[in-house]
Length: 365
Image (cartoon, rainbow, N blue to C red; front, side, top):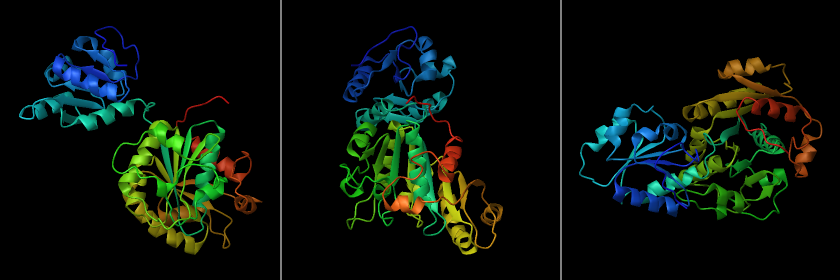
């Protein structure tokens, strides 16, 4: 249900804010909000909008009040959309700059886009979920194991967690977590295309292991996912989850780049070996083109005495942590027992330390 509110404090701080006196434009926005099953708060008086302006997940400013908003001195913020009805209004772009709008939308042409953005607000929690990527410096480095262990550790904390298998040649992460027989969609059955994906609907459609949802590959001949599909799925995951962990292929394709661009941090797993370090150099070069924060996890022991510092100095990247040998890990993986599921051992301790670097909600058991 959509509500008009003409003054006072914002009753629900996570509702989109609409600032306009244009009844025709307002009716259009209310109709789109209703289609998105989202409640909005309306301020016809710019003076009452300050508190809501700061806390709303999105602000829609009508072209009729944009000059007034700019003169009021409201703070600059992300998520401001200027909405107009007149495509021939040449001055709208300058007014958008004055108010700090990220987007200018004309109705009815932009109805679909605006509806999607309003619907996004229903799933947003703060800045959205943290997205982490793992990638191997060489084949068999242990990046998939680290990805599953990170996701398992987060799920053990009762965080809403999504594990995404972006490596079509990796054999399927559903085998690693023991969900190969669990009902739900895999990549070949999922075709989000270029449009918005509902995070709640995606989580409902995927196999679930406790707090963990898993998007994996099956054993079919489908070996690629379009980058726009990857981006749509990851955006949905971030809207609906506290943490999204993506296991990437070593060959960084367009889909992998879409994940890297969204990643808060990418962990490159490198065995403490000379040849593995040399191979990782090429992987890191490709990763650093798209990712903003790349760190190295060094897996020991080294057969030649190579230290973690030696590896990171050779790669020119910071050390995220060291992965010590873990007895019984290989056997557990063969049995489909998720690594770090019990919260003990070197891998669980490493994942705990890595996740502690990020602001993740504390959830009760």
